[in-house]
Length: 298
Image (cartoon, rainbow, N blue to C red; front, side, top):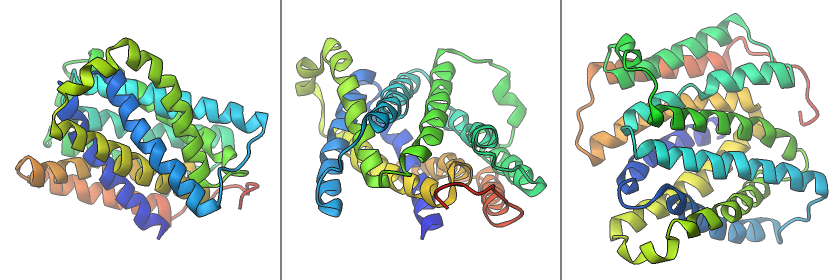
């Protein structure tokens, strides 16, 4: 079930690129990020209280970790995310996000002494190559010719933020459940986003949002955050950040599949070939030749 939930998480996160692109022209990045996590925080508080009976108490060490998670995975990631989507298309953005597992794996080796076997390296290469193939329509080298613009740099900021969020979330879940960890980090990030959103006309602009804007924000808040973050953190707790992080390579593939049904874009041979490579890469990474050193939560 953990692997299945991680796959569904990648599918839901693929949809966030479509939803985020849909509101990029009508909702400013700060307001979009705040409203997304205001919605998410409301659900997370309710679900945490229902599953655990209350919001668990935290100590100063946990509070510092939670603030860091809110700053990286909520505040910084979403500012970069919505800013980037206002400047470049969703496909190119999802390509840059697909580099997440590489950095998560490398820093997992440095911080948690996870080991990179030959099959693990092969799996990473296969899955990233598949993601590149999907986004570039079979012409991988062409995507590097235009260089890195402001939009690409903003989305790369998402990568830096998410790697930090993924790696620092593991120690927190040694003392807090995945639900509580996501809940507290979402609340912290929402509070950080409030004043920047307020300064960008949060309340004055709300009346101009259309029905699709609110549907997109709800999708981003509930499906892309509440379910997605909770399942992803469950995966980190059970499998570790390296094995859970590789499922992010499914995100650009799912974004293409969703665009086929929602935007009526065709699924080409390159997309199918990329999906096969990503699937093969995830299989090699998670089920073959993988070893980690013992850690306190195992």
